[in-house]
Amino acid sequence: MVLTILCALLTAPAVAQVRAEYSPGSTLANAGTVPDPGFSYSNQIWYNSSDRLYGPRGKLIPFHGALSVTTDNNTVVYVPKFQFLHAKLEFLLDIAISNGRFDARDPLDGDHVIRGAVGISNTNFVPFDLGWNLKWLDLQTGISVYAPTGRYVPHASDNLSSGFWTAGVQSGATIYLSQSKLTQASIYTYYGWNRLQQGTGIHPGANASVDYALSHTFPLTSDGKWSLLVGPAGYGQWQTTNKGGVGKVNARLLYGVDGVGFTTNLTSPYKGLFVGMSALFEYDARSTYEGRTNVITAGLNF
Picture 1 (tube, helix red, strand yellow):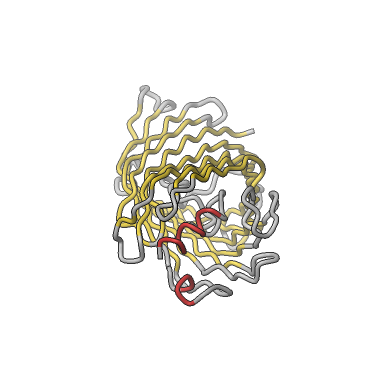
Picture 2 (cartoon, one colour):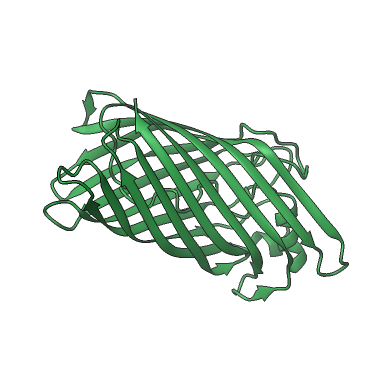
């Protein structure tokens, strides 16, 4: 069991198969809110690190090493002025640059392994997304696709992309808990179906991700143009179907992990400029690593 999980980690520096393509904790607040018409850009640094590995029953496995992944997401969003089905239309393109590092000693023979890769990873695009603004609720739902645009060679140790396409459905809700809309609950879900991996015959299992937050926005100026959103947040990510094209033991190793922490977001009046930060600590991991996630995001409207 130890070797099976370690092999999955060793052959996936970008953590493509040990975890889902979606980076958990990326969409904690305002998950159901589509931007106003026009172009917007955001840059998000997503970082996850761990030195703990857990088995399928949540038991700690002797693992002398560390795993870290940094992803720089460059996202452009376009919302046209016209509406469809009384909803805003949203189109999104996210080009990600990944930096993954695995540094460990095999618990069986003591060999020291260091692997890593830096470069363009999978590209995410949303060809169709609808958003509704209601009195107490903002909703959005659409299709999200991940394409293996980065370097990938079957069985190589320095791959940057997953080697397979992922198609999924996403949805989000921003629930306003006060008439001023300063207090909100937010939830974002993504469910992805993975295609066959190129050159390996492996069919990764489907996965589900959930981000959530309960936050309050504090006006920092009398006109409210400067404001600070803060609140507790968390996420969960789980593999929902068996993996194909592998041995029976490996096929049934469905991973899962949860995280909890806080999120904050500072908004300014200058072209919607904002800066956000989140810190989350993982728990209840099964068949995967467990660590901590930090997210820093900044964006503006054109």
